[in-house]
Length: 121
Image: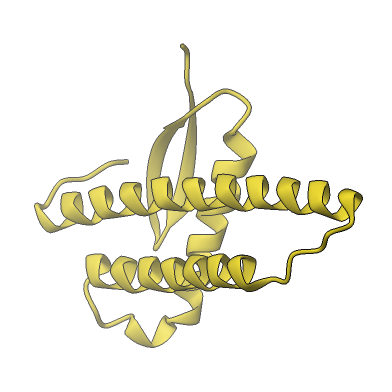
């Protein structure tokens, strides 16, 4: 299976990430989400890059956790149309959760690479 590459700029550094064909825009969106989280924690600029990425990862993981909780505690509706709509929402939420988990794994790998002095640009 072939893959595509997407270049993300996060924390002033460029990273080339492999993804499935057709997923480029989605991965770019995930990179934008990470950059937005980094902007929210601007007060950490004096911290190391890996620590700032760790905080951004924690914030994103917390959002994912809250979304899962909200999804689990949503009252189920017995109307057949609503049930199928809820099932579609569950599938979409699961797909987003999986993508966020993959991105968190990639961030962790990037943080490890930064800690070891490696570069990826």
